[in-house]
Length: 191
Image 1 (cartoon, rainbow, N blue to C red):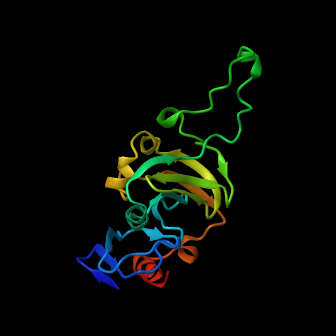
Image 2: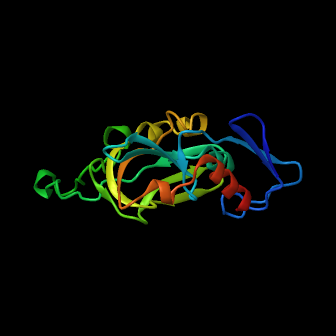
């Protein structure tokens, strides 16, 4: 059963499977989460917010539903650089390894291409690890390395400071492939 508590906070009770992963709720248990207007949602529980309509860029994060379902997220791992060819092995002693990134300083493939099906983000809670694959191919414009250093941002503000990345998808039509908030809520009910 889904109950609308106010215009943005939802409770789901007696749901046999959450987020498509088979979690079972006991009688009387519920999770509370927000679905925010002004964004679109994927069936993988990602939200998309238009950053620049002309440039076809979107800010992406995880839905509050997924965060509530996972519980406290203790680690967020964004994708790392695909191509380390810029690091010449001549620049390192034999025992040294090239440094390809560490959190907010070099959070990953900013400016790199991401293929559909590649790892978009890995989320770890106390009980499980969840890998979310990219539903599109595209150009990564910016990564929010702060969420790697401070995963509480995803727990406390999934729709604000807890965003993951800004991308420019290729061959991706959000109007056709993403859900409006009401459609996302209906999808959650059907899961």
